[in-house]
Image (cartoon, each protein chain N blue to C red):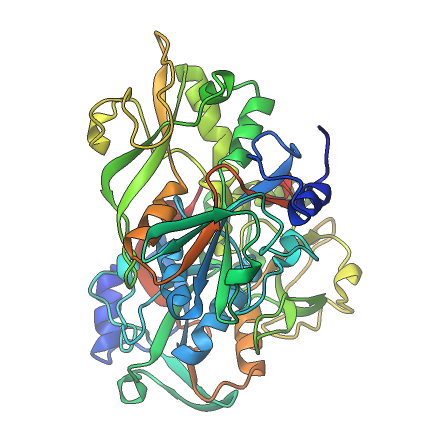
Length: 258
Length: 258
């Protein structure tokens, strides 16, 4: 399948694509989506700005607008993702493929950077990404590091982990440093104990992956941090992309790189 | 004078320092300040996020709070800058050294990155910074590039210019790329015509500087963009640092670098 971002969004819009987006439109930025009522949006912006490594904001819409600016002119964030989750007071209410019926004039939409962008850069540089090799979800862990809070939003930093050789760890730092708007450089490598992680084989989210002899775990700030802080605040209503079902933008990965 | 950031802020607070901050506390981040009522703050955040090169947000306070978080724990943005400007409907009302009497519970404070940080890095790498050599203000120009607007905030991109040799221009790109939170890499180099700049000797703000034979002008997005867009929106009330009289933080320049 070799669809453009606009073609993928059009298929989502007419209800003919509702699957995960990993691997689609390679080279184009995919983004996490969060939709909140305006009365919470300001505090949510502050939370993201105070925790830029886990929560890198790519774009915020005007109140009541669902077009994501320069990231995809003409797109509609109410219909152009493959699948959404609707939460009431932090509890999942339903998953659906079009949120037009939930739309309100006081909604603000956030696009937040996703690790797909830096994983693409790692792969192009020959650095292996284990969970892709093993066709799993990346393993993610809640750490003992608390985010800087803002209004009702707070919670632990969640990290994703990719095991690589020491030389590839150095390359991975170099490569991902170029992408501060999609989590940037790792926050830790080696012994997981300082992060409060007891057992790498028991991730809090996603799947455990193989760590070969001679490899070290490398930890990046993860977008799940944002989702966890969002839901812990138990907002009256919040809408996000469904896990893995991202918004595919017209922005090229390289346009986000330094 | 070899004062720490905390000592400088304390002297500001007790009214014993009210001068420009260029060159003070070398190695520490200095920041632009904007204070706005909450009802404009959300649109102002959106404007900054949509124009991250001229308007890189470092920190936003909770409404009614004047402590700038991890950038200077215990500091007070109402008293700890050397000098402030108060604007009503976009017109300068007064300059003063303490804004406590203007303070309102609906105020939100923004710290925005400043080029002092990347100029320090250039100097450490041996790349000359002409306006520092000539003890002038950096020359700044309004360009024909329009910022992405948000609510009442819009206007042209303003750039600062530093002339260097071609090889130093390459170094300057490398060096300033590491600091996306303080304007990052240049946006243009060479012929000023594509930016709509007619005469480099007649800057719109600041002072003209010498351009030697064999040097090329290098243009960076400039924080004056933010101030121009702010005042063009004619907000009921807005407070900023006075030009050159920045907020001196406890954050090291290198902590902002990639």
